[in-house]
Image (tube, rainbow, N blue to C red; front, top):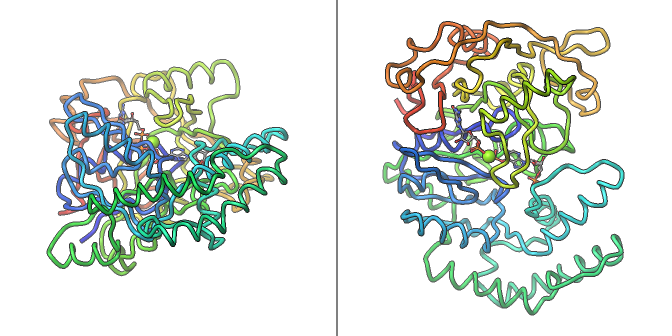
Length: 442
Ligand code: GDP
Ligand code: IMO
Ligand code: MG
């Protein structure tokens, strides 16, 4: 049995919190895509942990795996492990030998390309972690994989082929000066040393074989999606996307566990009760139309601490976008959803949701395939009853029936629209502040 946790919107839905909650019954927690662009928060008894590459099961001492679909920066991985150890955790993290390595030239190219696009206002607003350039090299068959770090001769061959091409791109395409990030000798020395460390600490695995063995031994496996459905490279708002597949199908491809296995398990979509976005791209329900809307967005941003965990950027805020969730429920094949941040919406004077879009005089119930068309969509807003602020600790303790009536109505409306049951409701960041209605392991 597996449980896959997927972001339903634009990232930062609270996936870390759910992985922490339900990861309690897992033995192994697997990230299947993305890299240190993710920022997942776990709050346990008031202690907050910010995880980026290390799977969120680490807070509960679960084995963490970075699957073959991930891109791994060994510099930030070892730094993060060190920080978590200083916080008293003892993370056991395995890294797929088939995962690709983020090298310093990937980060440089990420920022160089963003700066160039910014000149015409076309930047994506990436996290600057080198994610896109690394996946480009993977697809271009010139990437360096974690397994290559373990063999200094192979690593040298790979670098000798790829680095001059990166240097040429920086110097000849962008007209900039290449620096240390294109020094084969220095890269080889540093990254062969990472390889030695990974081997010495027994951290590398054949991910598919490792998970097969663990499952055969009876272990429960949880998949932790990063990012979200609308920033998936195939199903999101291309080109304002990340370069991997956060959607549920990615769990199979990015780990080497068959789709028949993940498909027999549960796939739970994490939904933020409103919408946030870091970076560029369309957002039809964005609250930015006038000063009143901006003030409301500011309120929600403060109450929900909507500032990027990775970059600190203020997140853009909007009403819940239901067409987006119909798209996510279909694309991911959700068995259930967890709706977070219900406490943040409490006490508002008005509450709306984007029920549909209007485009060229027609009503659309889902997201158009091209981003240009999506950007032209006007939201068809519905007004729903706001709920009051209540003692959320008491609600979390008593259960679903203790939710304010208007909040229950909001959830019921959503369930009907996406034809998917609400498994859990987040009423605060702490592990204790989730109302569980159905346990996906049950
Ligand atoms: P992730 O990337 O999907 O794991 O989400 P992030 O950790 O980047 O952002 C979610 C933020 O909301 C974090 O600060 C969480 O601690 C917090 N959070 C999660 N669930 C809830 C909730 O139900 N209510 C509130 N108020 N905060 C929540
Ligand atoms: P978690 O896992 C929110 C966004 C970036 C940018 C776009 C591409 O915490 O939900 P990238 O650096 O991946 O090439 O950036 O994707 N983005 C995220 N937004 N949450 C994330 O992760 C994100 N990871 C990337 O802001 O718009
Ligand atoms: Mg996040």
